[in-house]
Every structure is written in C-alpha cells, then in structure tokens.
Image (cartoon, rainbow, N blue to C red; front, side, top):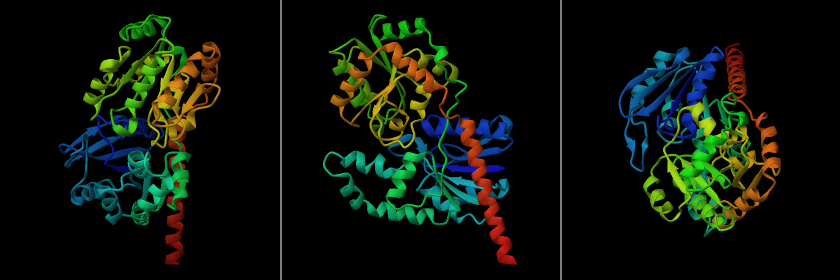
Length: 396
C-alpha cells in the first residue's frame, strides 16, 4: 500500500507530529508499505528515507506566529505530485489549506482525514477557560464545529489518534469513523537504561545533590504546553523537598521561559535531544516525568516516559491523563500551578521503590508504533475494499 500524507503539521523542528511521522516512515517500510509525506517547506526538495519513504517539501509561506511551520498556498504542485505518485490512500491532517487541496484532487485513492488535534481545546478553551465555562465556549465557537463538519464531508474516512480525541469530537457532533490509538518506539525505551551516574550529573546541573529528586519535562516551547505552570509548580514544591527540573525543548516561547526560570535556581532548559537512544537514557535516568499540556489528545511523550519506567505528574485531562494510573502517577487540575505543586509533593513523598516498580510493570504494556501502523493499514484496506465493492455494485 502506498500512503501519501499531505501534512502542514510536519516540520524537521516540530514536536509530536514530527516524531510520529518519522517513525511511521520506518515502520511502514518494515511492514512492506510505502509512506510518503508532502510537507510545507521553505524550499522545494525531496528527502529520501530508508525503505522507499520520502519527505517531499513544497515551498510554502511560513506561519507568521511559528516559523517552524508553513502553510500550503497553491494546489498545483501538490496535485502534480499526487498524480505522479498514484497513492492508494491520501491522508490529510490539517483543517486549513491542505484539507481543500486533498478534497479537490480528482484521483481514485481513498481520502483519509487523520485527526492529530482539536483546535477547540488547543485555543478557545485554553484562552477563555478562566472566564467562561466549557459549554459556553463550545456554544460561542460552534461555528468552528460546523466548519469542521463541512471539511470532513468529502473524506472517505475520518480517524483519530486516540480515544480522548474521539470522545471530544463525537461529543460535539463531529463524524469519526475509527480510533487509531498511537504507539511509541517501545524498543528504544526501557527502565533498564537508567544510569545513576547520569542522574547525578543532571542533578548537579540543577544545583542539587544526589539525594534530591529529578523531574524531566519534554516538549516544544509553546503556550499550549503550559511550561510556566510546570516551572512555578516545581519552585513551590521546592519549598517542601529538594527537587530539580530539566526541560528539553525549543520553540516560540524559549526566551520567555529563559526569563521565567531566572528566579528558579534548580530549573534548567536544554535543547531537544533528537537521538532516540540518548533521549531514552536521559528519560530513564530521571525520577519522574512532569507535563503541563492538557489540550493534547494523545500523550506521546508521557507514553515514552512510562515506557522508560518513570512515574508521572500530569494534568487531569487530555492525552497524558489517559496514560496515568494511581499506582504510578499523580494528576492535578490543568493550568493550576498550586495544584501541580501539591501533586509533585504527593508523588515524591510516596515510597519511591514501590512507585517505580509499578511504573516498570506498566512500561512493558505501552502500545507500540508497529501495532498502531498494522491497525491503520487494516482499516485503510477495509475502506478501499468497501469503496471498490460499492463501485462495482453501482456499475452492475
């Protein structure tokens, strides 16, 4: 099967979508399929990947509010690529320009909308959640759901990346045909990678001794990640017990976060680690994982942390919350630094060996990206078969 993903969310310096796509290219090749991505880039170029995968960058305008990403402009170059590639499936992930470009392409492939996020949660609810109820926000922005319903209509199938997103969207009346829960590179991450020497070195960089606690947070520096909440929570928790925080990431808010940690002697910012083996060792060597984003529908990095044997401190809603269980996690009200600080203290005050043992047991049960890819291909094949059968019946 040849799948072409027309993707405005893919960027070499992106976050979860980049991680998912990069791994999907390799997994699909291992399964005997070809995954190709047409991405908005700063220049026209093609990047070959092992096993026949490709990233085809189409020169596009850069988003004014986030230079990591672009927005497609002309349909012509993308339609020309689709004509040449003759895919079995064309995927779309964005409600913006790519949606109409894919919908208007006249080729015979089935068209799939793969839902990675929910803009209602990511923006209006995050911006207005302190002054309006959730129901009031949904009513005020009901036009967006009507817009989305129209966008989804031409597609042969609409799938989500997990049950949290499916529940959110169906509750608001949007069509979802299948839930394709994401997975991670489980073979990379393991509690067995833990290094006490590395842990001590990371604590030293946070200005703390070996008997302190080390939290790790990973993700791009963007308002939806809620890193100021996490930083404030760690600072408040530090009044109760010695705790440091390492944040790995970059983004539009990096300079803001650098100013924010100026009064936090035990919080350090580090650039992203793209080497998966190195990242897995760093994660396994921390004492717990902390996350601030509650609008994300799937907890990719939280799943990676759990697969590394880390206990979790995460918001009580969103994708990360779906990964958390009481045996190895504490949750808090999203956006509330005081509640997050209490959750940190609760977790770090528990029996460390018992909590890590529970996380270690859960680590082996985290869904793999191969399992996700196999389920997705099976779903696409079923849609293709139904469409062919419907066409044959119509001709008869």
